[in-house]
Length: 606
Image (cartoon, rainbow, N blue to C red; front, side, top):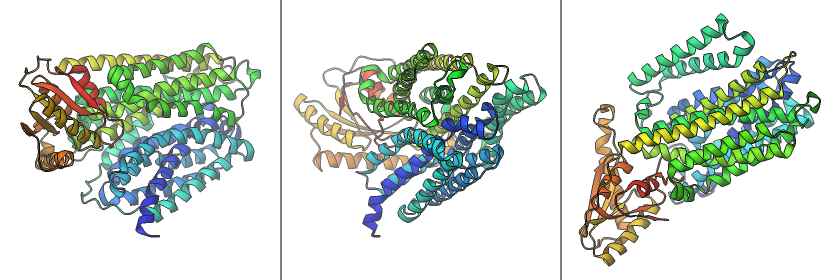
């Protein structure tokens, strides 16, 4: 295989790896009823086949992110896929529920593959092709979810539960071989930082204790010593983990980023919506499979239960593509609030109307629209408020919180269904409606949270001032992205036509001086910002800049800097999509914020 052929295959192989992670994770919800039947276990016990995968994925995401830094990225991906393959074999051959849960835990490592795949694309592919491929990777998880549910349900229904896990083992094994043959070693010169094993262990203990306490509380009794000890242990270890992260030289996640309102808003929304999403996924698949003899449910086979969730995946994919238009009309805050309320409406609809199977499809579609818009907007919300060198850590923590929400939602559903069960321990229709109304309430709470935190953020923004008058410059923000270069070309034409000075600003995003841990990065960031600006200027108009032309490198957060400059400008011109932590992925939140709050006209170039 030639180097050119290998490069052409890198993208498809990495898409396969990302699909594998979502397909493997989707084996939990549709198969819970079959697991409970085959192993003579309660639904709450069978629910751990899903919860444990999410738990491992939560802890594994920051671990793989750190281990995958620099030259170890390819090795981390290969080892992860090998573990996922072994997990499939263990689950397929399990003779008891404990071994099945062990296998599912090993498969949960696959949930952390997407960030590794995106980082590999940015390094292995040409810069012109990388953004589109990263965008494809970002939506592959939704497509895999839609494919995994009906496929695993169909296989389990036709050939039994072990066949579904054998399928997962074969797919992950093929992906392992493909990655080994195609994906090149990392050439990154950055030296990997020491891993925070203490933080990893504390996070695992805290999540495990909390999830076991929440999921088993209704059966063991909330006041029993075991549950009290588990929940107390979880709370104390979380406190210890937070203290350790704040003091560690190379923490697992950068908790100090939560002091930035945009990061706190996005992370809080991701956690809360993650809980609601998995409450609905696990509750709805179990509801539609319930025999009609119970007085509710649709006696649907496993494959139909999987098909019910296809509208969720389809609408998550399609609605996320409308994000730039929605942000331009509603602002980022409006998009987040709207998405939360649409999700709540979907949950409330099925809680009220659940007599026919088509109603489950409608609820799935509404949930897909709501979650698609919110989850597409959250990364841009987070990266808007952090410096570039902190963006990776910010998105890593976002992944941790989202997976934590998934795991908590799965465990909380099992708790509610067990608490509202009949005398034989079987869920009742009241238990399922309680799950749905709880999820709807969580979505409404998320919308209120976004609104409140956004209001605080706006209060901290610089006050709007009158623009600088007829002599004020036209300001164009440049970050090196194709959209910003296009905006610069437009700015050159407008400044000449309007006889205005043109000021090209590139923001050097660095931490506050108090965060001296980043002091060594300041010089590198300044040089990189200057090179980015010089390259953009050359691409826009060669070596002959227009008259009345100046450049500036400004320190601070991108949104704040541009809003401050708007008080002295006659116009600000921005590209609709810039470089965030993932280049080209709907990072239009800066332009949306400027369009909403700037003190001068803002032109967004698409």
